[in-house]
Amino acid sequence: MIGASLSRWTMSYFAAAIVALITALGLMTAGYGYPHAPVDAPPTLIIVHLVAIGWLSLLMCGALFQFVPVLIARPLANEQLPLPALICLLLGLFSLLCGFLWLDGGIDTTLPFFPMAATLLGLGFALVVWGLAHTLLTGRPLPLSARFVAVALAGVALTATLGIIFALVRGGIVAEPHLVDLTVAGVPIHAIAGLGGWLTFAAMGVSYRLLAMFMLAPELDRRGSRLALHLGSCALALAIIGGAVAICLEWSRNLMLLAAGLPGLAALAFYGRDMLHLYRARKRRIIELNARMATFAFASLGLAVMLVIALLALGRLQEQVAAVVFLVAFGWLSGLGLGKLYKIVAFLTWLECYGPVLGKKPTPRVQDLVIEKRAQKWFYLYFIAVWLGTAALLWGRPLVFQTMTLAMLVATLGIVVQLVRIRRLADVKVDDRFPADTRRPALLHAAVQGI
Amino acid sequence: MTTTFVDLDVRPLLSAGEEPFGKIMETVSALGEGEGLRLLATFKPIPLFSVLGSKGFSYEAREIGGGDWEVLFTPAGTAQPEETPAPLPASKDEEWPQPARHMDNRELDPPEPMVRILAAVEEMNPGEVLSALLCREPIFLLPELAKRGHRWQGAFEPDGTTYRLLVRIEAKEA
Image (cartoon, rainbow over all chains, first blue to last red; front, side):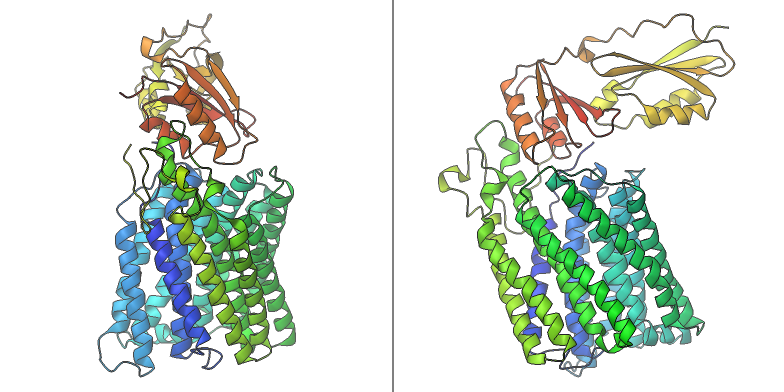
């Protein structure tokens, strides 16, 4: 078959991801974790993994199960994988969080939380990577956007491998000296692999295609776009593989990371130029909320890059790294994610509900499912709070930071209410809502009709 | 020495959304000494030219109407055919009439092209063909057309930016 259909469990991934985001923001607002605890303390690690695995990774996995088939015009190779993968990832995340609580003295029982987390998360991510990579293999030669996703899958595999090593060492299962060294010194590499190799690369790939599609802009596959891919891959190989080797052989890890920084910076510059070109070359003059909000996410990525350069120049990157990670995770990745969710949920809900009767009955348009004005204020609040929150971290103002995470929590809840209204078709006129032969989509999964 | 051609019509495979590459390579490897391949496809199969070129075949492609192409792959060392064989008599099932309706949906925001094509498809009569121009492959439309029992052919035009879709309306479900 050529073409793509609805992914049954994408909404379930999105729902689980949103619950994780709200929990993480709630904990940060309550003063849990950094800056009240050190960066590497268990409470901070709980928040970091709630955000990185619970929110961002589940969001990205759900999106990729739907959009990899769109990128290559081929159906998912194995429709049965997404649900067991989701269950493994959720149970694995829960075990991991319990493991950190146990380290912190919050849990007395001595269940093997870290080995359980390593097994379940390893299995969950392996299912995701296997399912998506197998699908990509059917679509060769791959278009540019899909090649970014292929690199992202390598990124998540490396991130998970490092994570599993850390968990087994922390859990006392493994005591091999090189792996212990890696656990002690490899945290920055694990973070770069996750936020850069996995999440940023996947976001770049999806943004090339989705922005072009929704703004009627040309598909880009020019020299600069390929350079972004190749330089970015080179940076990741240096940082992750080079970094790990450097630690094991007792070379300078930081020198390796600096060497990776140059191609990484060039890759982001080429990517930024392409995104600017997509906006300028678009045929659709008035763009939707998701594309407008994506510009704030791109601005956050640009700000994060400038912040890294400035902190490096001042020699203060090490002490301020939390602010950079916060801006990348919440401004760039979460900002883009929330903006795209607003579009994707509307589009998929519309397709699920009205697709089968299109042309046969009058149906609402996708735009009839959303009221952008209502959502817009929450997005503005969200981005302003992220930027001020980053500033509060830089200037060491924990109370201001907590106020900003509260504002982010309120904004996120505001956006989630809009997403639920979209999924329930609550903003479509009652008389037009369900033409004959249509029914309300379920909130948490999609009904997939056989062909 | 005149080349004899083995015929292979991959149009039904393409219309069914299947990948014809395996079938083509299977046929090519079964060719006897001095035999060529006459391929019928719903688009100009440019990638094949280099694949079969590396196996020593030269090609001659021509459009035979309705967006279909006939390509003659001739093994090296044999003379080109003096006259092009007549196109295969298409069976009744494969005859696609000239399009009864044309649409240019290239400037429309997604998913409007899909909405308009499905609306037109519902208005048309069985046996009629709809031709539509799009600015990208209509990923979500194709399964929906198949689900409704209609047949389609589609490919990017040589410019690489316009996707031309033909839909043949089949009898409506009762």
